[in-house]
Amino acid sequence: MKRIVLAAAALVISSTTAQSVNDQPRPVGATRVAVVNMGAVFSSYEKAIRYRKALGDLIGLSNEETQELIENMKAWQAAIAKKDFGAFSKEDYEEKLTNANKELESLARKAKSLIQKKREKELVTLWKEIKAEIAIHAKAHSLQLVLGYGDVM
Image (cartoon, rainbow, N blue to C red; front, side, top):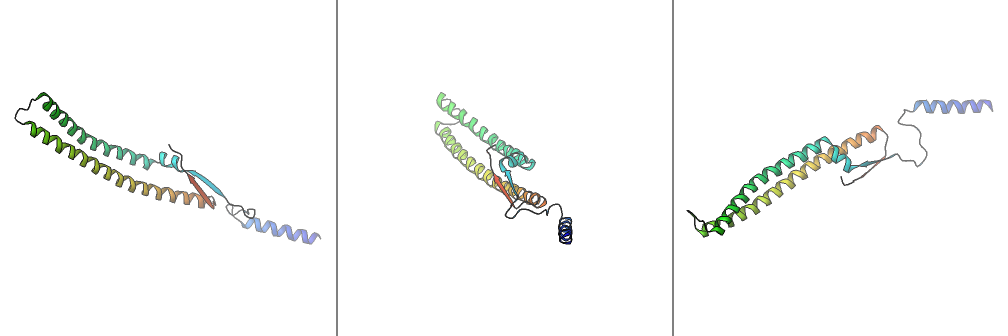
């Protein structure tokens, strides 16, 4: 009887010392799970912050051009209202206003398209980087499942 207990103890000790820290025995059916708040990650990630700032700068440049056009339109409308045509006729001012409206719409479409393309490209890049880092962390901590959720930040 003592021999069987001694053999079993030796077997248990040898099997537990052969395992690494990350390979500790788990109960049958146990799964190591982690949860990631993706909203917090995207809002605090340095690269995401730089991307948002660059996007804001891009929008600012578009707004400067738009503001100049709007100021010209206001001046032309004021000239028409005051009937102060100077070297131009009323039709010239109205044509300028029509062309300026078309240009404003064109600028808005271009800016929207550029911003959407840039933002989509940046989000894909960020997503890939964050996903890779999560995979590295999960492997280092022997996680079998990582769930993500997004809080609006």
